[in-house]
Image (cartoon, rainbow, N blue to C red; front, top):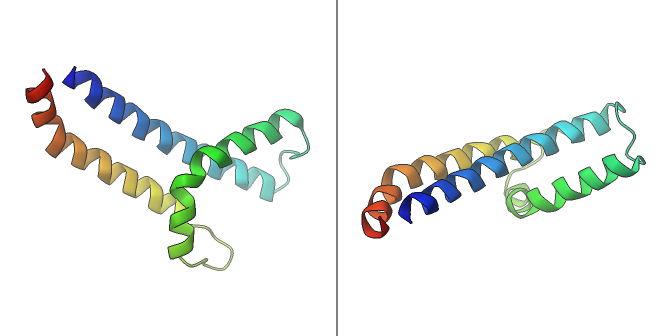
Length: 101
């Protein structure tokens, strides 16, 4: 059971990292008019990515100032999520696996 919880936490953090990367790439594609945001599929994809990444990025956007129109909050969020994943794997996974098996 402990292995499953450790695996699930690792997968959720990895998925959030990939969603943040996809959201950043899609925002660049919007900014440079590569994709049309009026396209139904692209609009739904952008809406999903925005809703999925907002709980992580919005608190960071309140703290980190804008650097001349460049949003660095995805980079900070990815570094923070990797830090949390490494910290969890090093500190909590061993006792969790030992406790739950």
